[in-house]
Length: 110
Image: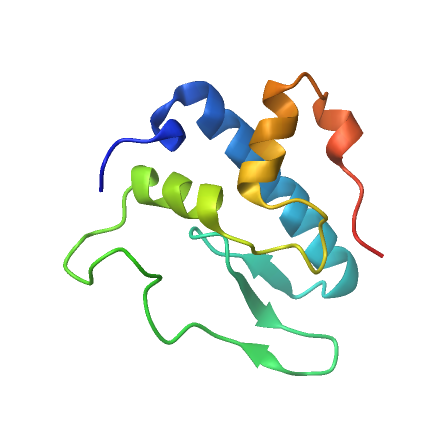
């Protein structure tokens, strides 16, 4: 995997903020669900549906042991949360780079 913006410690901090926001919004609707280290929703929904993961996310090969670098890569590219939170990871990062405060980016999608 070539280096990218997700390797920058400041961007990584923004991506951790994004994951917390997504998780908070998901849990507001489905309290027994969470966001896994790759930024995907997992758990048990209010309707009793179980959300599980059957494979590792692409494009990370199965032979790669996940590290924080892969997590940040996935946060940056994942669309997870757009059903519950209005911004993707890369959109959140762009908003923070443009000067938005973390508090201004905490609203959940209705």
